[in-house]
Image (spheres, rainbow, N blue to C red):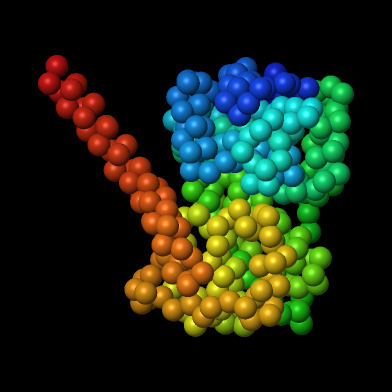
Amino acid sequence: MRITDLLYKESILLNAAPKDKSEAIDMLGGLQAKSGRIKDVETYKKGILAREEMSSTAVGEGIAIPHAKSEAVAEPSLAAMTVPGGVDYEALDGEPSDLLFMIAAPNDGDVHLDVLSRLMTLLMDEDFRAKLTAAKDKDEFLSAIDEAEKAKYPDEPAKAGEDNNSDRIKVLAVTACPTGIAHTYMAAEALEKAGKKLGITIKVETNGSGGAKNVLTAEEIANCDGIIVAADKSVEMARFEGKKVIATKVSDGIKIPEELIERIEKGDAPVYHSEGGATASTVSSGNESFGRKIYKHLMNGVSNMLPFTVAGGIFIALAFLIDT
């Protein structure tokens, strides 16, 4: 499956002119409806707005990626929109967003996640973004995506993850966001590109909707110089006991990856000690504010609460059926 398998022509709008963030979301939601893969657009949009309340999905560099997992989504799909001059989407860098992708993901299944992570990775390339925003028609827009994806992810790629044993992995990282769709992979790509630019070997574990990928091994952790945890939800931390750890928000992994890597290289990171022994699962390094800790606990709680909420709804529905 490729990115263009999730993006129909009907779900693309070029040279749009939304007056604000709210109208941009409405327009993208309308494009999603045209795909035929959304069962209830209004319910899906509520999921989008709930995600935006956590933090803006405009990650800077003119990119905004509103996204949500919802029971209202029948099949994974994408909608895309270019906005000449940009729209104020409350971006991390304060700049207007001129390239917007809306991701719709069903609650169950994760086949689409690798495809979506590819899109996040490609969007980190400035030349690729320029081709999309300059596209004169939908065919040119789709062609730019297809060519970039085939160039970076050929049909029969060489085996990934084969590191040169003589080149020790010096910096490790973990990225995660509440929904695990967009920011998780963009932060991973930004950190990897920064490591390459600095000539530093780095490995990034992603904690996305499909679970942890490229998981850090005990040997890698033992031999590394330090770990960057760019996450807005709880991740397994006890494994980093006694190592230098920078705990920060996922947006920092996107915005300042070089700074984070250089801090690890300089030893400018506190030594992590778990608060709850071997079962500790949350970041508690000294460079995290109390508010950040509360926020991450809440996000983790929401994720863990959902199965019980769904089960409760099912039991209530059954009770009504039995009663009638």
